[in-house]
Image (cartoon, rainbow, N blue to C red):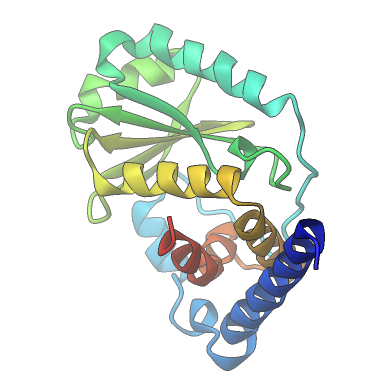
Length: 214
């Protein structure tokens, strides 16, 4: 067997494994429907109106322009926060060449204390971002957004920042894991979701499985 044949077989096996993981969540144990966040629970951490999605999730093929979009947004954030932005990283599927994604640029920003919204929130809002998520019970996460960008704010050193970056780097580096994740995403995206967060939660199994090897 040639190296190319072996790689093709590994990718095929990875896609099969991803399908099994997805089947577990879709058929055997659909926890994101039985025990996933209700409208009321989502409302507790949403700033503003909760708007259900009630549709499938549309994925776009990888766009080589996404890294440049990240760089423009990173400059926008640096201009707003200056040295208060201790870390600015491109994360999520748009940060992985070759991976299909929702066309939203996800950015993780680490600040001295993400619970101290007054130290960074007004500056981000002044350049056009809007606070939409406040999760004091989950890593003191805050999310600011505009129509094409999600800015996730954490405290510097928080473990979730490391997880996001490690997952990105693993998918960039290992073709088999990228293909495994892509297969899971496409299967899940085809379903109808009350909230996009339920779609995101349903990917947890395959994400954890990949992170265990990162």
